[in-house]
Image (cartoon, rainbow, N blue to C red):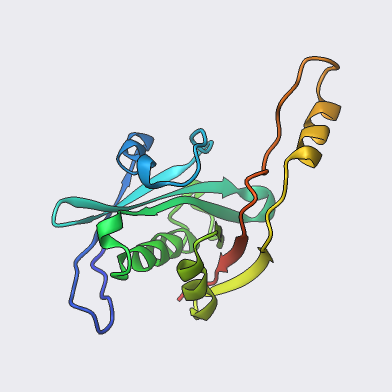
Length: 176
């Protein structure tokens, strides 16, 4: 996937988008706020400007919801605010909506963010719809109890998802 993206009234920046493997994550990991294992069955994409890596996103199947889920969006600090991140994200989401993603499904993509400026952009965009917001964070006690309940007695401890006490807003890509 190689695409030239126009960035509106800003100086023209040509961003090439490449589908890559998960090894490219090492270049972006230090700029991501969570430390999580690789998402299962993800497809990875990077945005490149003049040979320089500028953006990353992973897209996972969420076929039980007839959708995909985008995660690990990172825009390198020196490129933040230039519009390349949102243009990159929109192109990768459109690619999946058109049936070019895993298994060829023409499904929308869900995306969650804690970044206030990114959430503001997504809310005002005609190609995104806000689907939820949790503005106060949560803890992982309930998740831990559920995991322990479904496991064998005494074999699972100290587990759970969530618990990062951060605001999260959810969006769905509607397409062009």
